[in-house]
Image (tube, rainbow, N blue to C red; front, top):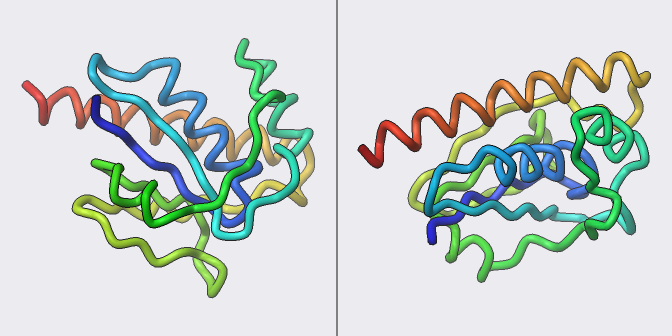
Length: 134
């Protein structure tokens, strides 16, 4: 099983959404996890609400810390931070930086647009992985 690791600062919004979409649409033989460099105590309530709109319940998820082990297990690492000193530096074979704005302080409508950006990027990643595997 190959793994995609989605990383952001708190693992409470962007990376949780990306993990949920990847898990739902993952190509055969792939799985996803997510982590943060400064994990929050819980998944952001707006992230839970926005994903319920998509038919996915992430309310049970718990933010987790990015560890060396998670990085080493990952075949692909996606950093969804929008930059800055809090964004992690990751050492893995394949790393992408998506620079997604942090929706935590946005209105629900603005956060919904960020969710949709993440969904589009995840689906595009899945297509690239399928092509790479073929």
